[in-house]
Amino acid sequence: MQASTVISVRANAVLIALCIAVSDAACLAMCVCSGRLPAFESTAVRMTTLASAAVIVLCVRRMAKRAFESARDSHRIYWTDGTMKGLVFAVPRNDDWLVQLHVELHPAATREVMTRALLPCHTG
Image (cartoon, rainbow, N blue to C red):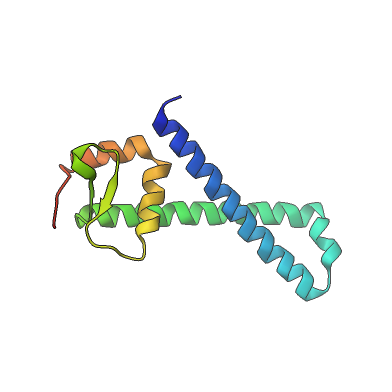
């Protein structure tokens, strides 16, 4: 398996696991607050929890793609020494983790897009 495939699989697994954990925590809190803790074990509630986790995954992936496109278009990111192995942020912002997430979710496509955009472009 190529290194980019391993990175992508790992990033997807972590993202899915975190979204399931967040969804489970929210569902558990709602069950506890409503006084219906046994409902947490029902199939319908579990399926709803997984469906909401899937929606969260899709939203985070879309946010990551938009953050990456914004960073690329504003030339805030570049590869270290042109080697395409390390991503550097020229101007740090709060959404840098989303850019990094997008790069890890789509390493081959990101490399191709960045190469076409004629980066690296150093600003400092």
